[in-house]
Image (cartoon, rainbow, N blue to C red):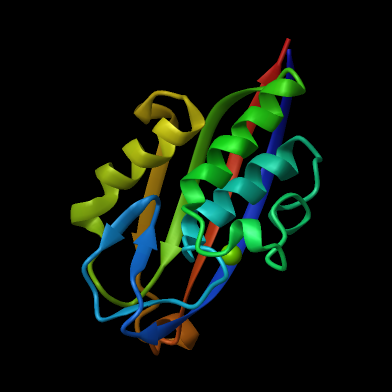
Amino acid sequence: MDFRIGHGYDVHALADGLPLVLGGVALPHSKGCIAHSDGDVAIHAVCDALLGAAALGDIGLHFPDTSDEYSGIDSKILLRRTAALLREKGYEIGNVDCTIRMQRPKLRPHIDAMRAAMAGAMGVDDDRVSVKATTTEHLGFEGREEGVSVSAVALIYRS
Ligand code: MG
């Protein structure tokens, strides 16, 4: 069995009055991510972890933010295409784990919905997808509510 692991990291700035979409779920909040796509920073980090595991470059290579095709796009579509790209190379997704750093709102009530949404987009069972959230105790840009950062790891395999 050929196991690979990958890491992903993404940051988006927050601005008042924009929709907030994280892990494929729209969350009620006064701020949202500034982005070319729907700004789903969690899915972007997961895509990069998957692409990194397969050594297939990064999300900017496959889905450039200069392309009109990806303007405002639902990032679940990018995640679905990323999973398809891996399967074309003979890989299956073992598991994905990500950590969202954000001061507000409380994410715990939405964690299972995010897991289900991302698992659905990847075509895997929910129990292969972990989403964790932490504040940064008011430190740094996340703590000042200027932005959101997400790191992710993914394990993929092929026989
Ligand atoms: Mg991004």
